[in-house]
Image 1 (cartoon, helix red, strand yellow):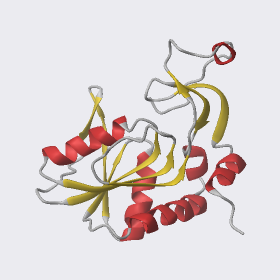
Image 2 (cartoon, one colour):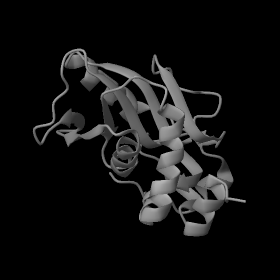
Image 3 (cartoon, rainbow, N blue to C red):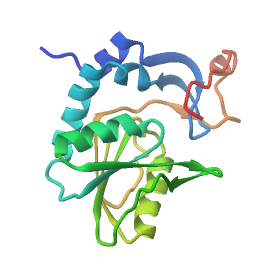
Length: 188
């Protein structure tokens, strides 16, 4: 029997426990450091093949990912679907297309990401696609930790695992979490 994605995250040390600040600015007791699982190329290939299978029914031309976390996921999903992969990256504090990447009017794209909490980077990526006249037909991620607060991306949204992981505003931390030193392991 194949291990679950959560077992794989635990085994590779990619699921961390403590006090973390997420890229959204929210605080959490749990953190998914996807790079620690994706560094294992065989695991990355298997995990992302499973994600690609959940997106295979969508008519798309290109996969796009927000940098940094989504790049490997997008590359592997694109490889599995036989599609080109591009990524958006930060410039002056916002995501943009660089490096000569283009979205053509009418082009259909899937956004691939590692972890979604509020979906801020995915929404920024969708806005980039729309600004070029493209359409996002789906969003896929490895881990959806949005719980019952799932973002509305206006298209199909799939994940390999959906969790209801508690998150807290910085000024509303429970005392036991506030007592733990904070870590910022993300890509910012």
